[in-house]
Image 1 (tube, rainbow, N blue to C red):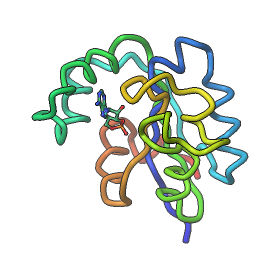
Image 2: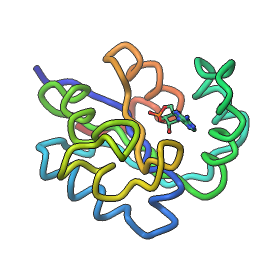
Image 3: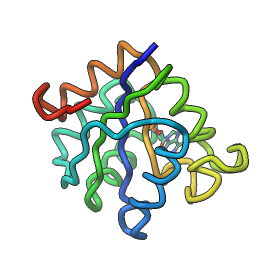
Amino acid sequence: MAERTFSIIKPDATRRNLTGKVNAVIEDAGLRIVAQRRIQMTRAQAEKFYEIHKERPFFGELVDFMISAPVVVQVLEGDNAVARYRDVMGATNPANAADGTIRKLYAESVGENSVHGSDSADNAAIEIVQFFKPEEIVG
Ligand code: CMP
């Protein structure tokens, strides 16, 4: 069933000019980029986005990292897009990521891991509206 997920190409990847290479992996996996924008996230946006992690010891570091350079926010569409994108991203820690995944190819560490993808369809919907208006998503 066609589904949408939310993706962020993170600062470690935009800094190294990897946006196009990450997008190639996404498209080769059969996911369509139906919305995309490069932004400088504000601290307030990053804190809200990662609110569920606010008690974690790495929260401050995570927010500082996410606002350290521009990011590319995206909506991806395809069959089972949430699970498919999680497969394509690979494990959160690149040391555990499978060959051919974005994190195996490009991520530097568990914190600077190149991409974010929603962990469920419900969270995808919550995350998409934080960055896109419905009319900006053209499927
Ligand atoms: P993401 O999928 O964007 O959602 C939460 C993020 O927290 C996760 O990717 C990691 O980049 C980050 N994260 C998880 N564990 C750690 C950690 N031990 N130190 C720093 N960042 C972490």
